[in-house]
Length: 253
Ligand SMILES: C[S@@+](CC[C@H](N)C(=O)[O-])C[C@H]1O[C@@H](n2cnc3c(N)ncnc32)[C@H](O)[C@@H]1O
Image 1 (cartoon, rainbow, N blue to C red):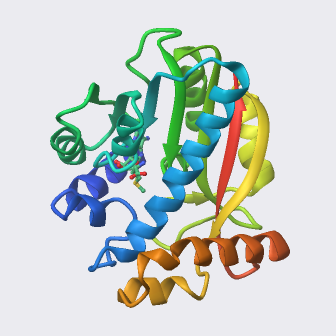
Image 2 (cartoon, rainbow, N blue to C red; image 1 turned 90 degrees about the vertical axis):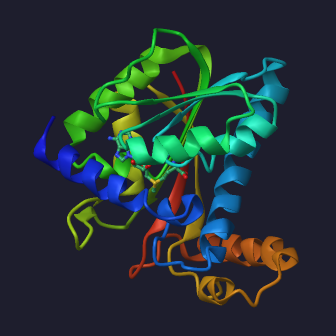
């Protein structure tokens, strides 16, 4: 296992000491309200992509791989929608939280080495992944992993990836994640053999109303309005020069 994967595993194992909603998005969000808002946007994007294709093809995506599932925050709504979830992650502590949180549903959680996938060929109907591939700093590792994910997907399966993107390629200040540009994310998926059907910006990292949500004073009934304003903002501005965005990529094999 490469040094940087060992470092990333250590980072996520240490966060698994926190509450399962705090650990996986912004660990400094002590009230957890900002994390819940972002998770709500994420789950809405996954659900929209899966149900759109379900409806188009009269072909339901039943078995879903949640790659880099963390504490099972995205797995739970998929299970509540009647799907079966296979969750894979590098951090045992987070997987234990996921197993506890989803215990009453049809799911299985397993640890991987972060660059290969312990799944049979053509065994899943769809794949979702949120905030994971940015931790694969090396494009060759990310491409190899995506090839393995593709091999685990049955013909016609869908993959929905949500990752941070910036106008310019660069590492985060702590050096543990890489910001790829939208064109680089698309090229990476294509290099692994996927056909990209759709890309869209889901949110902007520092949208000014999100700090308000974090204080806890914004009622949840207002989240759809804030999401709508955020949607207008990112459609008008694209990726702001000072910020990152969460980019949604939908592709098939
Ligand atoms: C930002 S958290 C997101 C967790 C989850 N996807 C969610 O939406 O709640 C990133 C997750 O990716 C996992 N991770 C990081 N690098 C990974 C890799 N190479 N393979 C599998 N999981 C990885 C971490 O352990 C962590 O659980």
